Length: 631
Image 1 (tube, rainbow, N blue to C red):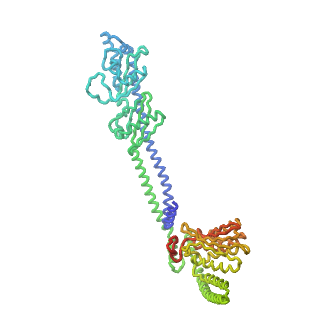
Image 2 (image 1 turned 180 degrees about the vertical axis):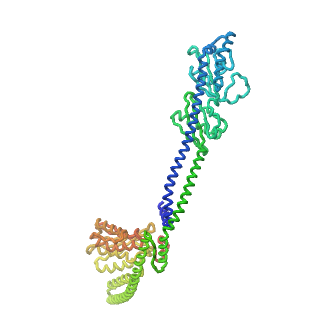
């Protein structure tokens, strides 16, 4: 993510100021526009959903009121028949009535019962069933054996005179006029009350039927927009609704889903109004009708609402695009006018960069651009002054080079003199003096031969060997130099004269007095991550832990600050100057990840570890490919 962010910021930084200003204006305007559009869209979305929900809840409540009205009419019809004493006596009669009694009953009580249906045209049937062998008077009075085996009838008997409501998919023909024919589907709802004379002695049953298309018209009718459908679900989880344009047929999983939600509602009292299937969304609005132990559900398709919301969303997006385009055009024109002077200053800077003589620039008006032009003119005058000074310094440098050539001639005279003294020592058979002069001459040639900053490890080691030979003249117990360096590592690149100060530091400070065993070990250890470590270890007196910590802190700080670090501890001042110079050169040429690290145990040893990149100066050595070549 950091790399992506850096690449993005680099790309933005490469754009012109005018482009960035236009982008900034667009961003500043786009943010509030998107925020307002988002909340507006969200509010409109909620408004559409709320309107659809409120509208269909109102329809559901109106249908509930209609159902309550039909329930009252059915209850009144059943009550009239239930309270008529002549009807009760006729149902409870265990003997055949006289013809006169039958005629009188038919003229008065039976006609009163027929008037109930006349005054309540939505009542499909008023039926009375008797447990006795009465004379059946169709279509109202029947013997109980005709329906005694029906489940709904048995359920009503268990209610012991209380209201029992039953929903059925069709209306059976009790008079058996259509035997052998499949009755048409005429879903109905029935109210049943048991009749007991006296109490606890069953004599019959009162039944009032009403077709569901009259009981709940919206359940069986197609709404005007065909975007909603009502369902009536009874206590047995039977679903009653229209067949035409039914959502249940188009979505077979709906019916089982509704039953599951009704069961959850029964268990927890919670109802989820949202439902989605096959990419279509529905609202499921629910009302409980406790008196008949049924549920009224209104299924509302949200396709129309979603289309309206989509149109509103597209309108908001289009308005934002037009607005941002207009703002971008106006901003571009205004910025082009405002940044005109800045472009003039930019063109003048390009001319100076191409090497053309600066003739001055005149920009009308003030402001930041005018101030920038003024400071640019001052800067060009300063640059011209500095160029003149640089030319003068270059002349001085040439003169210094000539003097250096003269000094090199003097160095040749010194080398020849040393060679003559060496020959005299050999003539006098002074081998020690002769070898020392040879080592000293090698050191001086290596020092004067400064053709570049880099040298091979092989040359540095040879220089260290010469140095130790010269230093051994001073000691009764000579310094033993040990080397543990792979052959292929001798071609390793390193900074010239970077190893000698470390060895010199050990020679000066590692041992106190004579008679001690003096050893210096130089190792090149195995490398990791394309780096190599050169380790210089002496067996001297070591360093105090506090001095060692101060020295390592000083070495670590070199290259991290603008100014060169100067040590504050006395031990660091005494031992660390050469190390700091080497550290500064290594980090200057290779980077802060390389350099020196000192380890020491007081009275035992001091180790200096030099970390360098693995680079060869003169190509690959042998068959080892662990080093990289310097091209």
